[in-house]
Image (cartoon, rainbow, N blue to C red; front, side):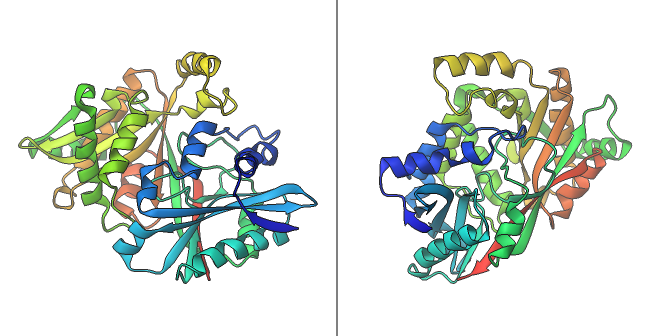
Length: 367
């Protein structure tokens, strides 16, 4: 067995294609779009303006049996002043020896950059799909959430990785009547003059910048948080514009100034699973056809400025969005992901009847 860096287009294609072997026959795996993965792994995303990625393949008797990415995030280093690198895009069809060999290669790369620990999985950052699924293997992931084989937690822990944080996903069934506690909270927010409006799609680039400013303000004390850059926000606006429903992307205002936001998207994985990773003309037709049948959604972004918390703003944003979901024929929403120590959002999920049904883990390993 050998572990080699990805240096050729052929190596890159092997790296990209490995999940098709890993999850062959798995009914819950959703193939990622190959062109998006290729953009990420070749450093075209604005995240890599301040980051570096090195890809590795494990081969046994000439056959690819594993992959990993080592990631140096200088933006994280500037924000946290911790000598921590990251790993992501981990896949393995081999045993613990393959996993250990992959981590040796990733750790060596990051050690040479001065790092003292490796953390992940992040693909390639906490702004993207991250965490290793450790509980909830009986259903498919929602849009922009990760998925992995049930054997992976044992493989990572066998290689010496240890938990640093869990990320939680709650599922909520949309009902006609909101719980009384939620209604009391939303009434409090309305009395305080909080107004909810949908995003304006004809000025989406400006609206996304409002989201970015609110996101950075609301999340800056959260574990592992790194501020979203303007370039990353513009990238998100460009790539999510065809997917956004204005009634599900809302901004809370107080006296005309933005104080909070929420973004939900239909669970597009229910359409993407039929594309097998390709979005050509036929794939696009399939996507348009299957997206009409989507009845699940994901709440992927929620934030309120610190000075406006505990005023019912979060509850009002959620209630307004959930009512819009129901009006559009949706029946279920996943709230994900939530840090296991974010008690404010965890309580909010429970007030809406949320049930914890998936758990993802961030691991760390000394270098």
